[in-house]
Image 1 (cartoon, rainbow, N blue to C red):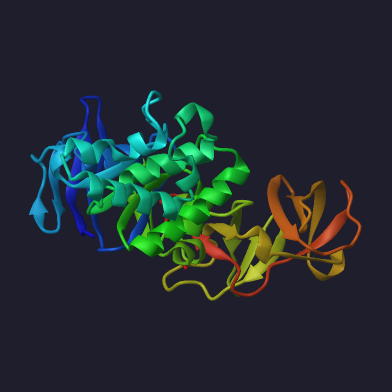
Image 2: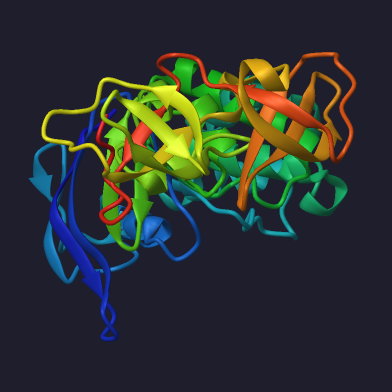
Length: 354
């Protein structure tokens, strides 16, 4: 297991910075997810840690040792790619043992390592098959097994589940997390999928536009997002953002209706325009006379409940509910925003105010 420390790390390919000012410490045995949209720099950051790219500035340390100039093979890290990168002419056993043979380890040691990893990953009965005879999930497990047998200081995962269907992704999330608990190894996991980040990571590093937006436990980022980007990236359905004005009594008024009342942060004057963040599952429906009147646009049934698309004047919201009342497009219903549900954001900077 290893600690990985990044200090003021940057990367520029010549057309502007891809990464800038990255400061991060990944603790020994921790599972950290680098999460963000395509182009945010998360895969580049992983490749810098692995040594596949050279930083333009800053420093990378593994267990306190500076590794900026250290070759990838000498960093003792194992990488699992989105593409399985298996040798098609080799069996599962041969794929998993290849790196150990390159090190000229004793055959008995190689056999022990391969069979031990295969047992952990449910591959024992597949060791003599070639990749073409395996499913996508099995191939990904072989790729993971190839990394495990090396007993590295840390595992680096680059969107390893992107090629799998939804059911297999769910299964592999469970298997990777279970494996992490068993091995206790430091793991860095790149993903654009907020469900993967939320369900697997000890901490999430939210990246956007080449910079870290927030670092914290999954629930912390969900409940206390630092800014509009983090708030909108986490959650399904995503957070609603409503333009509202702060009244003198703390009321948040949108389209002439009071949605909620808050104790405004110090220094926030009445009449200030704010962006109000509302999680769909924290909203409720009632009669139009008992809440803010909104119009039903679309109703989506999910099985466990319904996602109701609502119109508040020209603004749109989503609400997740298990309320069984009949709903149809065009119905006028009451919207209830419970105390504690609203989050306030500065509409210019995007920073959270409460």
